[in-house]
Amino acid sequence: MAGIISYGSYVPVYRIRAEEIARVHGKNADFIKKELLIDEKSVPGHDEDSLTMGVEATLNALRRVGIDRKKIGAVYSGSESPVYAVKPNASIISEVLGASNCTSADIEFACKAGTAGMQMCLGLAKARFIEYGIAIGSDTSQAAPGDILEFTASAGAASFIIGSNKAEVIAELEEMNSVSSDTPDFWRRNMEKYPQHAERFTGEPAYFRHLVDCTRLLMKKAKVSVKDISHVAFHTPNGKFPLRAGKILGFSDKQLESNLIVAKIGNTYSAASMLVLTDILDKAKPNERILLTSFGSGAGSDSFLFKVTNNIKKLRAAKTTRQYIEEKEYVDYSKYCKITGVIQ
Image 1 (spheres, rainbow, N blue to C red):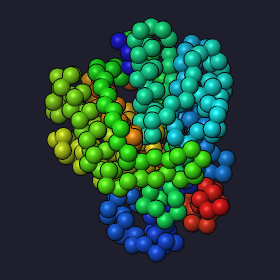
Image 2: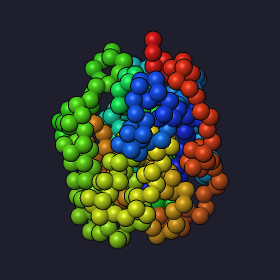
Image 3: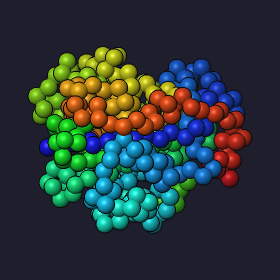
């Protein structure tokens, strides 16, 4: 077997309201909020980036379990906003953890880079090449001033400790599936500051095609139906997309409720679906099934089916995702620009 041993999350304390961004650009905040189902988004602090947030999320994961850090055999960091153009976040994180005798790498696949890291760790753990692996999704996402993405592009991180010890696994992997294609819905050329997007490709040909198809294939492989699943975690580029995808697949509002955290923190890119999973694990009970499907522009999706075990009761207390969401301080657009460097 292989699965999740522990998990951790991190969301910066700063927030900016949709109304504040709309005010500066002369846009209709009510229309934006209705279209995107986003009330506010997280903003990284002056001293925060994808590396520091990845470390914080991983430390939270380690607080929940008592593992020997020297037995961590892999650290993979997924992000589209790494600290350096040439120098990995992952090796720095492994050094911070005292786990330098491991394989490490940064992974890039837009917003599904973190779940790609989960797949790699699950495979290595199941094959017994490693005892523990750490998969991180962390981003301080960017958007051009006034672009529709500016209302959603935010910051956050999620980290998962993966292993194969039956006595430690809190969520056992039952099935896994992926799809990929060359779909040009979102991209950023080298040295460009902000990404570009082809709006007509963002919905049907990109997000819904990949996420829905990948989920259906996973459920077919696992021989499960909608009623067999307790919680669903989808990629959350906004509030509307995961809810619509869920309805297409036949899931209920209750099964999809954790996806609604996006309304209060925005789109954390590589961390997005993984943060939804952390929120689910904060409340999950033994024998419940959790379905996770990420989406990355370019484009592709990864799907996972986990079954919660009794070991989840053994986890130590750590800061929950909801606690991070509720702990916040609002900033105006001027401070937002100074913190993030939105306007040069």
